[in-house]
Image (tube, rainbow over all chains, first blue to last red; front, side, top):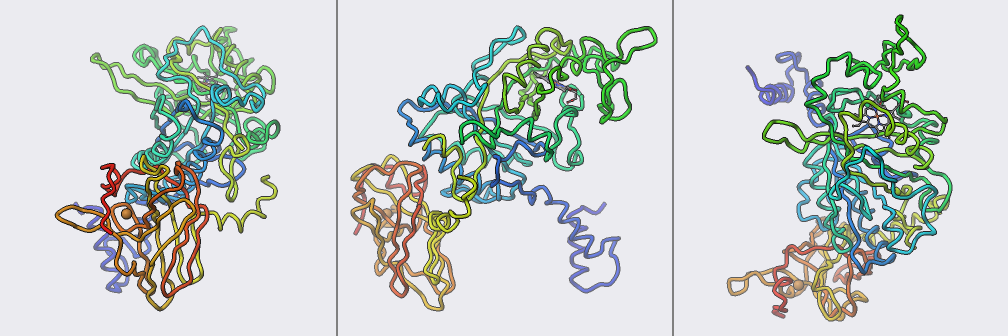
Length: 398
Length: 161
Ligand code: HEM
Ligand SMILES: [Cu+2]
């Protein structure tokens, strides 16, 4: 057995010596390609500047930290601007794979790895700073739902910094920089880490799987589409929210022990889609449109009355959201039951017309509720993106 | 505001904590905001100075609206302890080379601050060179930072000038 590294080194040496032809099948070009492949994740860069903040209209990254902060008592709008000045510069550097200014560990900036971070504000921030007139339409704390078993330690927050990257070390380093620069202004309320697939596991644009095994995200509006714009990005109201969006965050625990007692056909009926490829029970491919009217020969609905996708499907055409859920894994108890679930996020222009009617239907009937429990909840208004020397949320605090 | 952003580009360069007279370039500048950077207290400016000319230049002094006294400092072993002191004759930036001002190393020391220097605030800083034009950088941002200069933590000014 030749180690990959040894193999590469000998290939490179052969190329350097001007050897013609392949050494153990590796041409110089092949070696270069292989080396590029090894660091492809480091070199991929998300875009920071633009009409929207980064990390939303983007294929989901491998790892995430959601950090919620509460303002210190004396913080003013002017202080907020100074905070946003630090964060805007930090995020733009980290997105390029560079250390932040004053970075005590610049050597950890080893690659962009699709680092992104965006900033959002909870309703409590507007109350604390007397900014009620700047509240976007339909933006308020969520009502209580009968399915909720919410815990404070996972809920609420004046400010959200949602950070993600394709590498856990890049994520940790970036998180530290952003939190360090936040400490003069706020204290950490909660941090919720999560993950999706590692780079290289699924082709871009394909839907990832959650820890129940389901293909999750199929019915989402397509990234970069006009549809996405009209579901997610706000283009009216106060200046600061234009190009922004409203986010619902729900930490939803999965009861995998009881879920796994179901057979595959039952699991598939709960959602209304196949586990193998995410196709609707009435189709063969993931992209097939579910036929909610289809019945078995015995008269029963193929996609049952209680199925998650039937209940979640829009009744009014406006009732659509963009979901970008990361998984979480918070260890296990002595009986081996895993504390896992989703850092479920939904982005939309108007929570009251998009998320709320869906959640109200699911609250009343959705068989999935038997194995899923919302234990954390928050809403954040996410300002638009920045260009040139603009600061995140500058028009809100000026 | 977004529609007019093109107009802001020259200002953006001006404000981004870098400055240049063509020969000497100052980049990635920042100033420390800590519990010491209050009115009457002290701070320091860090960043990278690059000398693109074919002759050595010497950073001899500095100036900023926020400090009564500005000196070019180094860290040195004095009586078995790392202390900072003014550099005799200034800090040389060799021809074609860069030097880094960083916590625990060379820095532009600000003393007798005229006001509190708070995180996220921006100041302008002038670097006085012998052998090159002085340069002034606007938009040098105050970063919360503690590391590097042990003297900052002692609460005592241990300066050997
Ligand atoms: C742990 C909790 C949840 C899990 C595991 C889950 C899983 C899924 C899966 C597997 C699908 C089908 C594939 C897809 O289109 O993505 C789906 C669809 C959907 N889910 Fe969920 N979901 C959860 C919670 C929620 C919540 C809380 C909401 C909203 C309040 C929601 C709204 C939707 C919507 C709107 C769809 C698309 C329905 C359509 O086909 O039009 N989900 N979900
Ligand atoms: Cu000093």
